[in-house]
Image (cartoon, rainbow, N blue to C red; front, side, top):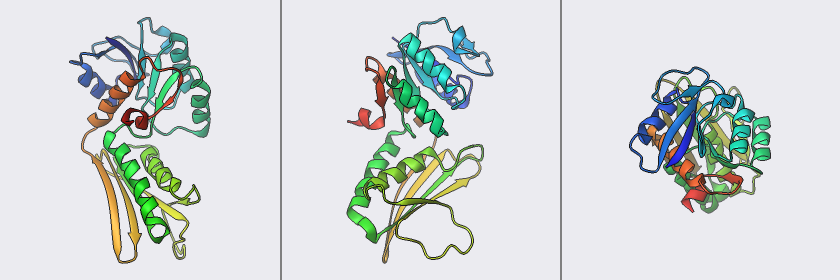
Length: 249
């Protein structure tokens, strides 16, 4: 049985992971770490230094705060780690690059299988449609999301940009007299409201026709399920960086 440490155990996503693993035959949550511990059926600690349980893999649905602490714990315990949160800074990403030399790290902007398929479809569309089509990305999330644009929107933009050799520039929203749209742009727009779990739309607008590729998540369970799948994938993997395409392949 795979022993999982759940970081951010007392949050909404932690609850989803716990629920999905209740009857799982391959993995179980042995403990959690959360800044605000409460009773969830397994021991929950404020700090990784307090953890005494044996751990095979960490599922992290917390935030980039104290990132080094959980990476160092994974390194010391020989555990893999699934970084399932977003909003990482450049210094955070540098830290991940540093630790991937000694830790098996799974990191992706979105854990949904459908979104990762969408990513491949968008790149293929950009390769076929080329410069004749303008690309605009619209992402919609609930009113409590702190970062904008979403990591998924940026992931989709990067996939499209790969088809253009990385030469496109990103324009985040538009306001005022901005002039005609330049061909070198990929527009990225963030909408925040209500309880929207996550919606992403990539629009390819050409002369007299528009093609849109969309994905909508109806529940956060889809991300919890993806994180569990990633955690199982990491077992036995050597140190390095992994992402959803490695599972798909």
